[in-house]
Length: 166
Image (tube, rainbow, N blue to C red; front, side, top):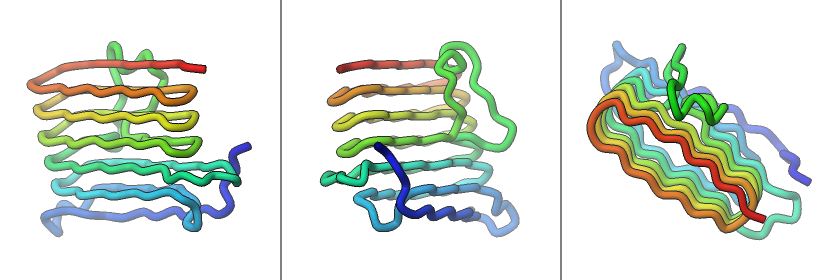
């Protein structure tokens, strides 16, 4: 059973230029749990919502690492997926982990790139890299010990990955 023992919601406005301070970050996680979030953000108009839930009996850390450079990445206000990424049913800018021992790592350089990731289960890993403009990626994994890696370079790439294990 997955329950959040406590909830920490943080809205942070970060930017490289004070006049363009419109990045948005929301973290929903148990502050006393085994979750770790590491972020580096530059640019403006970027949007992320991170949720990590662990079972009460969890013994292994969930980790999220995100690095953004550029503008309007993740899930900026009003953004929607198209094509393959739309079929995932995920919302741009959401990074969700339910379980234990999960790892997400993403490095984005460029602007107007949309992405979302979901891991539900234990021991899953997603590694992603997006470089360019107007790319979209949606990755979801269900079960345990799944591994997904993707890389997008250029303009207008669109990918959706779904994995299920027992």
